[in-house]
Image 1 (cartoon, rainbow, N blue to C red):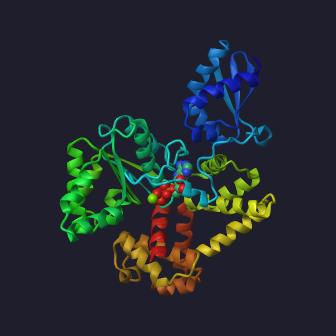
Image 2 (cartoon, rainbow, N blue to C red; image 1 turned 120 degrees about the vertical axis):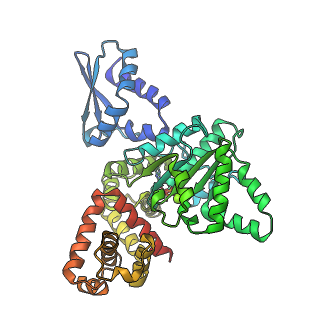
Length: 451
Ligand code: ADP
Ligand code: MG
């Protein structure tokens, strides 16, 4: 067996062990380049993949290679650049999740469970930014209601919370052949069901509907904070399910302790389970996600273009997907290969579209609302920590979104222009290092664009 055959056989085994997305992400562009004195040299396309495979799959791979060649003693991993790009030449037939937008219609939301079948664990790319959340999600499927109950996952907008929690439901449906009933609801839906129950004097029906499930998945719980009757009802539903060992899965854009209006007793219930966060993926994982989406859609893009998208699109995965769709659409419509230059133009254009005009006050209001402080205090002389950070963020956003001048921003918040510059630069730098700050900003932006 030559090296190539040996590696293909090894990959064949690995493919069975890993989910499709993980296999495609981490191992697709790998190669066995050499063997010497029992050491087998595996080349991976980038450092990120190297570290990941080295840490996660080394043992498995070595075990498999040994079955084929018992001289194998250890593995050495290395990075080999574009030279070894062995990108699958033949696109695979299966394209579960086409990127054309309209194809989304193929997926029918299951009226029974409210789940959208397009969200699967297989199509969820795993990396350092979501590893814990994914691991918890996978293990819940095997031990429903026993382990990690409730499971609370939080993270900024567009980072995959809905995908992950729906995927748990879909996997459960599949694995238990509908014997276990999951049900997915947004908190808005939950709220409107409560309102419906009250208005029509049919609270009992509403209660029964929710208590009849085995796995309750509730998305964006931060929106029920402050709605008394809904919180009350959710609390009782939660307890009823929890006491009968049913699984509860919750998502939010922030951790329980940062939902200011959430009732204490609910908060402590949430904190009694497992809390996992999802943060914004690093560059390498963004590349991995783009590649996985391309593969699912059975489409191709030049590596340099993928690199450009991963470098430029920094907001979240939803935006990453959106841009990718746009670029593919362009490529198809014009029947030309998209170059870096074209890609850059498309990215810039859509950024401009996103920056639809918002007023200064909308920005300040959103910041104040997010931090649960008044807009007045933002422009006061108060120097307490709880105010300084929101104020800096407000200055940052006035610059980032509205591109206002520093003197104007300073004046708006009762400071001079140097403070405005300092605030903008501080936040702008920290955003890259501090995922939780990044999340705060994304959530505030969402508030702004919602208003
Ligand atoms: P959130 O609920 O956190 O706002 P979503 O779950 O709606 O985010 O994710 C936004 C988009 O990004 C979805 O289309 C989702 O499929 C995709 N996505 C997010 N995370 C991943 C991931 N790890 N792998 C593949 N796709 C992802
Ligand atoms: Mg969501």
